[in-house]
Length: 564
Image 1 (cartoon, one colour):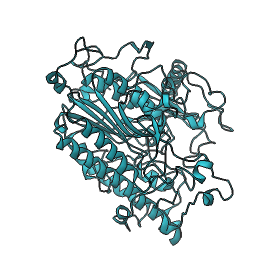
Image 2 (cartoon, rainbow, N blue to C red):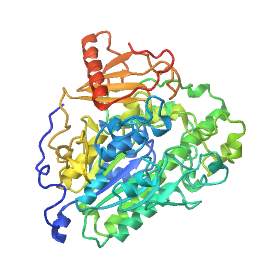
Image 3 (tube, helix red, strand yellow):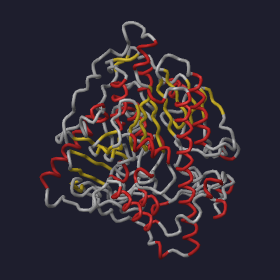
Image 4 (tube, rainbow, N blue to C red):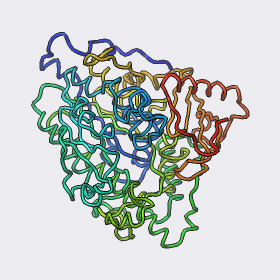
């Protein structure tokens, strides 16, 4: 890995300019549009090897710089805390997902379950630095009014507070509310309702476009944040979009995985001799009954429609930027929040295992109804591992399949039409935006000290002056749900317990530290722990140092999950 190059933008100004900027000065600073896809697979977009119709995202990706080594946390809210704060999730308040806090973690620093006061969000910093800040989509960083987007730097916001919701708004009251499975939305901080019957990606784009239109004559540059809930389960999409994919996945997930790998090689995204990691816990397609095949194919048809619909709405937002003359001055960053979801989902977690729970909520998972507002399914491990190909495993794991995500940047100042292959982190986004804005991070915000960025500015990468921003001796740690990883240069150590690994099945791990060289084995298929014991010991020691520095508190271990 190359070392960080110093950007000429890094020290241009302090966070708060000494004098108000003129309209001409403001015009020189770029606008920012950050788009997040929820549970998107690494190979889903056409520009990354997929067959789903994503012309708008493909055009942005191929005209910009595609990142093939961009990494996040293993799941959604930890990633979002890192994205907005520029620091590790264990310091930003989401040491684990709020829904999964263990007894030893509740009330401990870094495990608040919301974006804490040890950090200032990139929205807060840009707002104080003269930017107009707007957001529409999934928040998942705090449920109370003082912890929502309106309190963390967004002038205008429409937000789903939780991590997921019915994509047509059909889970806001009635039996859903009684089961505490209802979605809650806030409009500029006030509790509001999602319009029932509208589709999530459509309405989130509607609101963002409205916010952008309101500020069309504002001299200030803008920071717009568009975190979609697509294609997160439940698998739901408009019928006309689902119909586009009828029959497209009848050959099964194994055929899809191979087809996408061939395309990835053609696009230069992976090496020509790249072999995928063997799927874990998946029944061979040919062993399924005709009824099972029809059900599985239908789930993937709906998933594809969700990705397609998200792309259509990205196109609408881009059209608005072009209509208002803002497009040429905008830097666009797109990323997925983690790998694809491999769990089998058939009802909200609040009612799983409760007799008649799904029926009481009006859930209808018959084949012909899947994809509608009253269905509630995931698409399972077979499709998820096809979509994360060629990597190992899926969302929830610190493996490449769980943390290496689709990402790219395009727009003003980005040297495009290329691929950057170095290791990058979601914590790099906030310092990059601040750097491009000509601002520097303060030591304190609103009278309280804040943590310095852990991430690095990617301006050298965007300007094609570097492929990455970390040196080969710089370790990067990860932990979630007792699963751990440490990346250092080309080497990566991974620990996954034998039990308690519910995505996609128990037994996905070895119950001991494993070692991989990603330069020669990016699919993490060949454990080198025995042949490189000293290197493994070095990385495990680095992980211990990381855990101590970040205040990691491991949950109670799964049965027989003793690290070796």
